[in-house]
Image: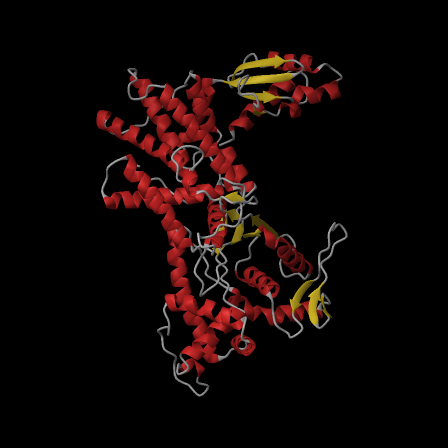
Length: 588
């Protein structure tokens, strides 16, 4: 379906042409003065320069040409040359009826779908998820869903941190604690045990202990670095340990991400890119892109248009060791070979922007990706406490993600119990669903690149611009529909009729914006656009609900029409929250 604004614009373009002016001036926008009109066209102001005519005269000519329109109920020329528009109620209701018939609510899939990879999550193995992982997971999951809804083939990759010194530290600590394990016996030739020699709880304790010790014990750190090198060179026992570490960590990560309603298509890590590094480095050298500088291997990526210093991209350190840059470049090589994506989106802390500038430029310059591959950095801001500083526990440490979700659920459970009596089991389930909406909406309603304050009390409120408020609106609609079914039986198909009262028209206009909002949210990879839309839609519905009789309407045709309007509103809201990554309960 065409966007409602496009249809009104087409009508205005015809009117400009009929009045003797170029149709290009017929562009229509939503009014920035809703107290005066619903839509507006300012084309007469621009046309005045071409036709050497007063804007108000051009506007008047166009309005006169709209005399027979079925799209608009009113068109008024206003000094100095604005055209104020009001949409026809019958045209608006007809548009909603067409939208209601569509499985995708009138939002058409792209004609030429692309393969898009989204790199988000980025947790380190052997470490618990903490609040610092929240934004990447929530934003990336929503962007993935929005791109899929647009019709693209989207592959989400968690991109685990499973390489480097942290692995060597874990291996060394295990070696000191359990020296008799076969992984440390150079003469061991049998198959290694299938069961890991540690639990996730032990693993999460081992790494910080090893990390802390390495900062004070130089010999210990040197041994860990040697173990890291041996692992990367294919040490049989260490490779087997790495598999155990990955299996135990990933199982726990999947459980925690499931609590966030986040899932990944690929659980690949930095280690998966290692086999691609030697050939990649050789290509860079052979083709003259990489050269030695102070012993390190680098590639110049500076461009003439740069307004600030962009340092060379380091490929290998002076000792031949790889870096994050090396791994990210090799990961691009792997992705191009295995998945051939047209676009790759990285959902990462915005403070890493320079790193990705270097990676993207180097990849393009060295031909690691195709020339038309779109590499996009979607940087997000920090999640802060009420003091404006990075969110911490009361003790000042970094909070584990599962503890944060538990705190949110407890707060939600308290509010649910205060609002109405229900069983502990039902209250607990509703608290999880509504609590997740509080976390996700609280994050996604902010523009990704901006920092925001994480306020549990505000986010869990059922009033204001919050997830629970959106869910409360959906539950209210479900409750009305359930009452209607109890009174009249099943909700049968019926046409949505024109609403002449302002709150009804406002609700219908908001519903008609759906496909335009979805298109814009995908084009800008901006979940906050969807949040802003459903907040406006929820407000419009609640105003309509308070000002309009629905179940009490005596005219059966009007009642059935309004029930269909509620069904459509629920469908739009539920589609949108699904794209944001949460759902609504049956009651609250």
